[in-house]
View 1 (tube, rainbow, N blue to C red):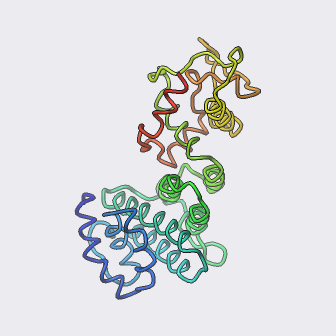
View 2 (cartoon, rainbow, N blue to C red):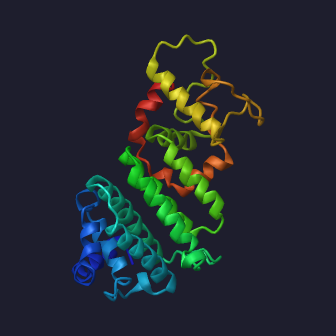
Length: 287
């Protein structure tokens, strides 16, 4: 089932979830202006969990019902929380965008993890419930709203990829919260630039450069922050071994690449979907 068909089906079900649970329907609808057509697909996917009876491929597997139920119950819980209108908007955007992606994944035959991630644990909360709440809390507090689709993608990928342990997921969620939007753009740029330095970034360091451009220095500081988090590494020129970096001027943008840890963060946040136009200014300044 393609995305357009799923969205149309979801739009047909939107009225049903409003009837069965108008509070949740109203909560999610605040994201309409930001997410566009995604709203119908997300509400349609959750309609089954609310008792609206969504059929079809998206709910053919019990896994779809499990995920939809977890998201629906979390949305229902948020209805009863005291949050500002802007915080409600950010949580709704995170839920709608990512729920729509999950619905499309399942409709297209993607298999959810089967390692007990969705099994009830302490006080009947599954690890999925814990990850979902953790990610939504981070989205709720996020001031750089461009980050929200990428932070919320963590609970999407965690639902399917068993290679991510609960410990690693929690670490990535905390790291994602701490990084700036520009640092996410840098990770996307460096992964797409490696290994051929296709963007022509500077291949020498800044040790002998008298930096007078505060903007470049700010970028280098952010790159060094990525190094501190062990998300990037910098091999010696013509060598597979990595340099030890001690401060920002040690950075050589053209040689910097994502570490294995950084590549896993890149995948779980879907940073490959960042529009290259978002980091075109970074490319210009780092040449």
